[in-house]
Image (cartoon, rainbow, N blue to C red; front, side, top):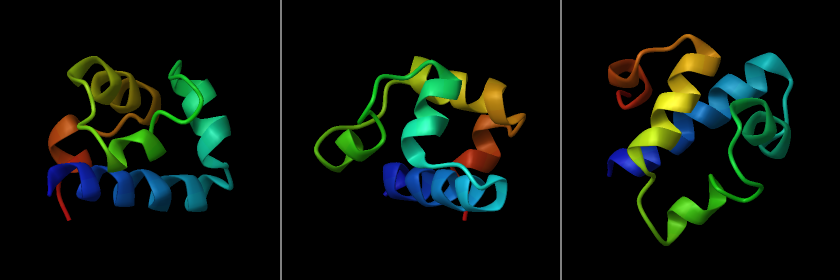
Length: 65
């Protein structure tokens, strides 16, 4: 699923940047627990856009393996 790819790519980014998920969420302007909440629901487009802007990674690349 796309949300799993997105989450995996975020985790990889955080690992490379030595960031916790919660620190990453704060940096992106997302609420605490947002990314882990995607286990139960799909991410919102505005959240994906915030992540893309913060990381400098295109939305397309965030959703690819």
